[in-house]
Length: 87
Image 1 (cartoon, rainbow, N blue to C red):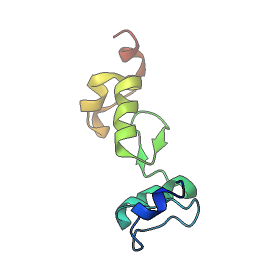
Image 2: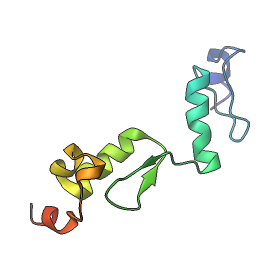
Image 3: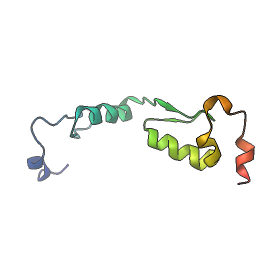
Image 4: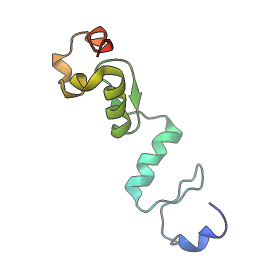
C-alpha cells in the first residue's frame, strides 16, 4: 500500500501483522492469515489437493475432475479420475 493510500484506511481497520495489509473486517483478516500460516481447510474429495479458499477448491474440481465430479458426493466417488480424462 502506498503512503497516499494510508489516508483512505480507517484507523480501526484490521491489520495483518505479518504483511501490513489492511482489511474491511476481522473475518477477511482471519481468512487472509491462512496464507501466512499455511492452513488449507478445503480438501478435495477426489485427490490430495487442498487450499485455503472454497472457490479455489470448486475451480480445481471442475478443471481436474470434470463437472460430474463437482456434483458427486464424497461418498459416491470411487476412482473416477480416468473416466473424466476423455471428456
